[in-house]
Image 1 (tube, protein in one colour):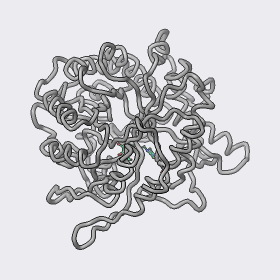
Image 2: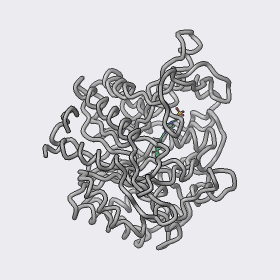
Image 3: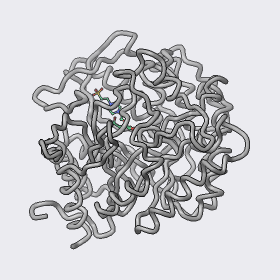
Image 4: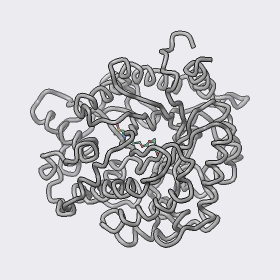
Length: 447
Ligand code: GBH
């Protein structure tokens, strides 16, 4: 591709998905219910009452989806493993039929020359564990490590990258603090134990993965935070959101310490959940840090129900169908800022998600000419390249997402795919962005 920056020959090009967003088949082969089954079936929780019952029916169409990946020429595929398929009630022996599905998927990837990148927790907690208090309870990290050991036992010889958790920030904030994601609690700062227990679960999972062939990391949702003005109140609000969003997770993982301002920001939260020894487990060395980036945040001082921060618009920035501002230069800022903040403590980075929802309009012949998505991806890849030119060790990029899918509380109306899914027929149709990404990968691989 002329004019497109050259990435290193060994740069890993990938696409990403997550179990509940694509699989469907929610009662098949012994799968137990997850908090997302419960949440999406509760009236008023998702747009149009959409659920993941069928989703993309990927569970029955994985061969077709593997062929779509092979057609793109990706080096790696990031998928997630549904804990309730492996342990239908969150504990006890492995459900072999659940493991069989991922076993076949992994072999299907390897047969096509695609490296499997498995996320172990992308938000579908077994409902039975939520019934015992979910991530608020210290028992859950232990259960998580047991589940991880079962998966490692079966797939540990073939998975190239392990991602323990997807975006622990989003689970804490949307699942337990604000209640817009499963399991739907509104605890505000009281959700802090959810952050700590996920991090502890990560640390225990790293131990359980000792001996596997692949590299081990964790994925954080990261966003630079900009104050709306230089007033002390807005500067303070920006610091608070940076702590809630980024530093609550990056600091303990990379430095073995929580930020000093932790108690002041999570006022009233139970910090006694942090016990001796936890932080050394949490900060076990990582082979890589997964970074998901969509947009930065601009904030001003806000009320207590927003923990003192209020997100405001970026003047002049276009927005995606999610209403998220498009500010690609913030991606370069984020990546270079990680080096400034963490220095030698920063492991190699993989961008494990980046992408955009747009209001795709198929032509009469069914073709989607999604120039807005192509422009988003193009600008963000250039931003990654600029960070690499400035010295940031970025090893790969996974586009979110291969397919249109169940966008959590926003249901099926929000489409992030390189491939369109017709939810009546479940037919897959590659969009223009699919062809564009294939060309990017081909030029990156030197062809
Ligand atoms: C990811 O989360 C998920 O891992 C994935 O499952 C999901 O489908 C995908 O992204 C797309 O949503 O309106 O400015 O406040 C994304 C995490 C957190 C990114 C909230 C955007 C809010 C934007 N997101 N953030 S704003």
